[in-house]
Image (cartoon, rainbow, N blue to C red):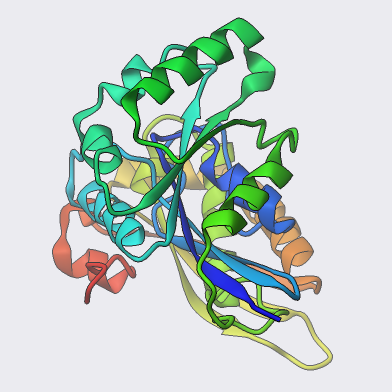
Length: 302
């Protein structure tokens, strides 16, 4: 029996539903999701396996025009993922860009989509928030550009047409032995997913600049036989005022953050944990090469 196996990058502008799509295709919540843009900062790998195939999805940060070094690194992850992939799924959010002008008119997007090397499939997401006439017009516009092997209207959150997405991927996936064991869902470890869950809750709980200025470092992660796992996590921010907001009056806000993060971590790990949070200040960490490397944001080829 021949096996198909390969890498599929999920790319698009911020907040188009890339992480929601990967989670839905995998059937597990691996990538954090929030209503705020730029939630995903790194490449997150998710694996969908069956007897006949293995699809390795790469969820990527949103395509944007970088304003500081961290965002430059995020965009590098996008280009690196495309280079490593057999297929590219390009998402567009029809609810916020109904005629495609904001997306297709973006220079970085155009550079990616004009690349002849990769097999590209356009997914028109959030069609449940649009109408058939608008969907048909966007399909016509996308077809005229001749960039895509296939165009599929979907609802990632509603699960509409996702089996068709898998079927089309399998049409173009090469024959190759599986890269990972069938029971493996990702190549990231529990520490990574715990830090991402805490960061997701920061996005949910805090407003404006706080989520974008915050990073989460797992400083201790101890599995203790007969007792709850012990997790000690540092929330890194750039200024004293941000630390004060994270903590809240008399530490009440960080307590709330700790509670909702702990519950989500326990659901993910399927076991009880003791979570300790504290706040560190690292000025301008988002634009500091050394600190970014220490936080795990190395250049993709390093």
